Image (cartoon, rainbow, N blue to C red):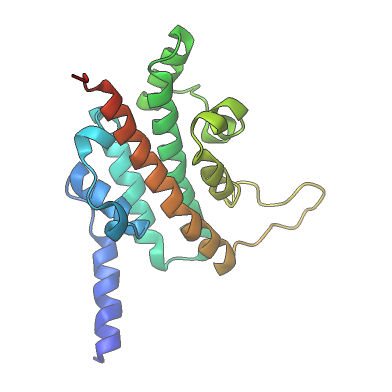
Length: 194
């Protein structure tokens, strides 16, 4: 086996490994977004304080990692899945300090309840885009999904190519960094100031 084949095999094996715990999943998200040199290792208690989202978070991150060598369509869709979850978690955290209706909607997002507002609907709310600026990049990622196989007025499916993969990968660091930054900002505000 050549050195390149060894590296390729090692990469494939690494991508099949699942995150052992939520801390590892959070580290894997940072790696996936290629931010390890920028933001280091985020704290689980700060970014993911509610254990009810841990299993879903691990699954989304691990699925995105495993799709790294998959078809462009699957890679984009898995990165969109991670992005949708980060959007839901950010909006839930934002709404938890809101009125009673927002708090109910936050709970639905956290528990992944049937009837919750979907990421696409959340990303279409102007007030949220103003309150959480990185949602603009999340919306651009979300639009790359293959959930709508044919654009309006056409019967031909829109192909997902490496170009779309590169676009999503270019925006993902902004989304992850924004999500982590918002979590730390909220945590800082909750600490009583002397």
